[in-house]
Length: 516
Image (cartoon, rainbow, N blue to C red; front, top):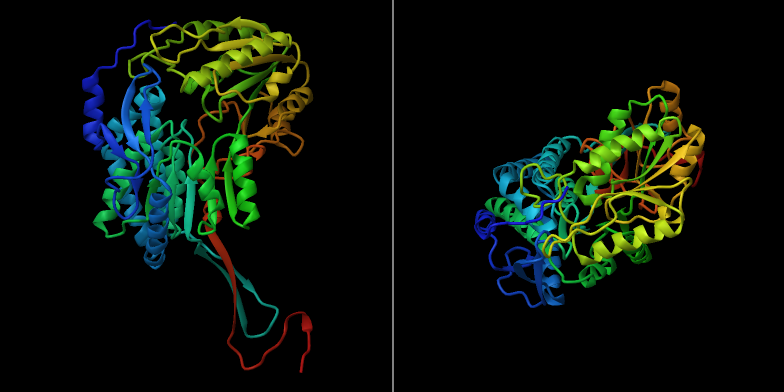
C-alpha cells in the first residue's frame, strides 16, 4: 500500500539541521579543528524520498586528507598514554551526547537515507549502546599469563593500540557502523580517520560534530577525524596509506576485494564487512506465524537495504502454501511512503541506480523461471525512489539468487529435507546471516552444527536481521571474515605482545638448548 504524496516540510528539515549544527553548505573535513574552507569538490546530499537536495558539502582534497592523517598521528601519541578507563569515560560522555540528540539524529537518518523513523531511532540507539559497551570494555582489555618452562621466568601477553585506524562506511548504516569501530578503537587507544559514504555525508557530519564537541572538552581533538569525498578516491588512498595499520571497510564485495588486496600488499590489516545473501529455512514443524513476521521484517525492513536482509526462503513443501499466503497478506499491509510519517513501514531505495538494479534483478529472475507473485514495480511517488516489496517463487534455486541485490526482493523455494535446505542456503558466495524456524531440537542443533550453516550468524526462531551489539557481527566467504562489536572483537584493533621476564641469576634457554 503506497502513500501517493510525499510531503516533508522544509521547517521540519530546518529544525533538525539547526539542532545538529548542520548548515546549507557544510565542511566535510575535521581533524584537530573543522576545516572552514576545504579544497575539494562540492557534493550534494539528496533526500531519497523526494529527490530534492538537502544540503551541500565541500569535500576534502589530498591536502586536507594529509592534514587530518598527520593530526591523527600526533593525537595518537597523546591518546595512547591515557589509561584505558579514562578513555572509556570520554566515550561514556560521547554516548550521553548521542542520547541528548537521539530524536534529531533519528530524523536525519530518515531524511538522508530513507529509513523509517523507528529504524532511524534504532540505529542511533545502537550507537549509544556501543558507547556503553566500550566503556565496560575499557576495563577488560585482558592479557593472559602463562607458565614458562624455564625456572624463575614469567611469561604473559599484553595488548597495545595500533595507531591510526581508517574507517570506511556504507550508506545503509551511516552512524552505527562508524560507532562500532570508533568507540572500540578509541578505548583500545587508537585514533581514527573516517571516510563515510558519499550518499550519507550529513549524518556523518552530525555524528562528527557531536564527537568533536566531546573531545574538545578534554583537549583531545584529532582523535576522531573526518574526510568526506564525492567518490571512492580517498577510500583508495586510505587503503594504500602505510600510516594506517588497520582499515575497517563496510560495503560491496567488489570494494572489499579491492581494499583487501591493497592493504594486504603493504602488510596491513583489514576488517571487512561486505555482502550478505541471507536465507531463512522454515521446517514443517515451525510456528508459521512467527516465521512470517520475521521474514517480512527481514525482507522489507530498510527497503531491503541491510546486509542482513532476508533474500531467500527455503520452506518445507508441506507448509509452503500456508507460509506464502501469510506473506502475501502481510505484504499487502505494508505502507510505503514518507519514512517520517506514522504507520509507514517502508521508505525509498537510496537512489535511481538502486531502482534500476531492482528492476534488472526481477526481469532476470523471470527469465530464469521465477514466478512473480507480489510487487515487482517502481512506484510513481513524485521524484522519490520507491518500489514495491517483491516476492518471487521458484521450484529450485535460480542463478540470480547467487547475487546480492540491495532491494526488497524475496525468493521462495520449496524443500523436502533439512539437508537440502542447508545445502541450498550455503551454496552462495556470501556467508553473513542465516536462520531456521523449527520446533524440533534435532533440526535446530543440526542447523547449528559443523554440517549446518556456514554463516557468521546463525539464528533459531528469529530472523536474519537485527543483530545485537553484544555479539560479534560479521560473516565468512565473500562477506569478508571480519567481526565488529561484541565478544573479543576488540583484539582486531590492537597488537599482541608476548613478554618474558627473567627474575633469576641464570640464563636457561628454551627447549633445553645449551650454548656456551
